[in-house]
Length: 278
Image (cartoon, rainbow, N blue to C red; front, side, top):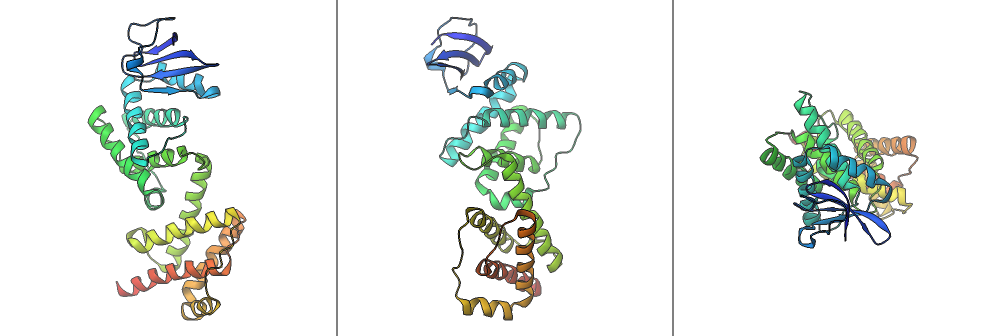
């Protein structure tokens, strides 16, 4: 492979097969020029993002190399921890996002993430990688980012999983769950994020319930007598669960069948029971 363009010391553009590709590796572009051969031993990654390649090239040309390097290390670590490849777009989204976050911190702005509790519950693996990432940034760049930033990184990583939808879809799902949790909090009179496993189980169940509704899967795994018992014995919890189902129907056009509502009521009842004990 011969070099078409040198982007920086660690990134070059080559013509490979029938398309242009970006090769990334330490020193792969150092003291190189057009038509120079690529040192195969220095190749770490090869990107082919088609229409997005120009944007990635621009990032590599304009952003500090240390930001690019830490971004790539985060991506490599994430792929190793999750044991799966991520969408090529992650190389744009993570690096661009980190550069923006670091610039905001430099300018004295505060980074906040209103979905942090839900992200921690829904995307535990991605969040733990996000925590590793902010520690890596502190070590390599000397910049301390808040826990909220780990949540932002987690969303980018989750979205980059193949066949998981867009960032917009991920944000919409997480925001909807947050709104449902807010309804339960208002009815229960407490903050669920402080309730440990009861909160976590409810969030995870709501996420699966929404997925089932979106996929059109009929959820009827509950005995009718059990459902009737929940409706009568746990009247308040069932009423709140029914309110959640009505909210989902209005806001997202997704139906929750009665057995689904029954299981959600059980999760809410556990929270209400813990409240009376505490």
